Image 1 (tube, helix red, strand yellow):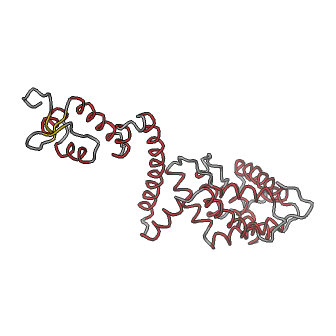
Image 2 (cartoon, one colour; image 1 turned 90 degrees about the vertical axis):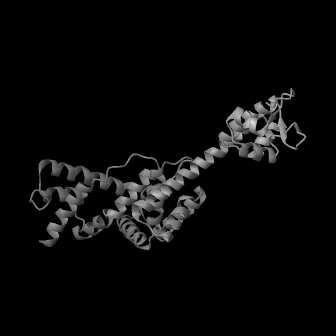
Length: 305
């Protein structure tokens, strides 16, 4: 406070009283959020006790991340602190979601050792809207199921859900990372051809009278029987495996079944299911790789013979 009985402060005295720098106070004053009450004979800005309280409010609002426009609106009475705080919370939530996506993309770039071009693509995929993600999935589904009206509708439903990646508004970095890889996978022509082949095998196995879910029932039966054989220690090439294959396949052409199983148990298909579970926030589903591998090995042993 200047020693002239007025009770006024220079910028320097205001800085010492509040712990702020002279430069900061002068900037806020220049921006119109801290108006001096008068000027000295020498032209220096002077402030009163109310200016000190106003300055503390400005500092608090700035530390909370509000811009000077919002600060000025509050100080001028255009909006209450509560109203501005509520709006700022919404903006912060959006910023946090954006930062989560950014972190996930950068983590993936670092893990993969990606190029600048790959990073740009990943960033674009990660920031797609829900509608844009659906378009990618629908394009994938249209290609792999085109003309295959006899394919099991349960398979179609499961694949559409698996690829949908229903990311929440606040996805985890793991979910964003999984979606990016999933989107890359379902847009890969080689993967689409692989999935198309698996669906073609499924469609060829079904006639007009075969109920939906039959394919899933077969897979469930395979897992059950192969699991029992493995627990008993039955080797795929052992004679005892013949009874299991007969119970599972009946009179079906075993060479054709082998082709179908090899198409359906591909590692990239397993990765597709794994990524889908993560992106959709679900617990990873068991892959039963060992059970499928047992049946494939048993069929290969007899095919070779």
